[in-house]
Length: 170
Image (cartoon, rainbow, N blue to C red):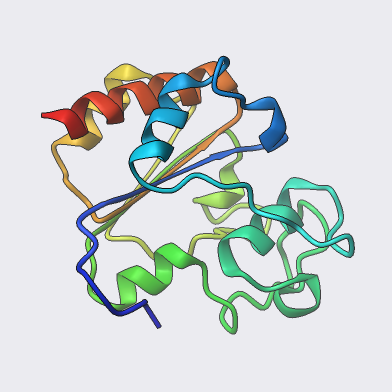
């Protein structure tokens, strides 16, 4: 269930695989921090029972359920219980919100590979080898309510955040 209260116009969620939050300081990613000052920016804590692999960590972060709930213990997502613990993009899509899932780097997040996709439903879905300014510019015109950009490189994530910041200022 989505929270009640004022209508959310847009949400931008940026995930950087394998990067600790404390390494994304304001001096390294100033645009991400600027977006956070205008809204919300915080680390997501993953419990100690979650293996430090992309699969279980992403599943825990995007579903809010631990390994015992979602059933993902490695980067092979086969045998998951995501139908019982849907990701936040799927929840928003099912609630009738326009969503965009833009994933770069690890196919099982968005594609039916290795037991994926982790994100089951989205109004629009794109998997790209890398997200840069040009790709972010295409997304600006779509005006989805929820965006997700999974990144493998800090600088690429920074460029996406800079583009999103400029678009939001218009």
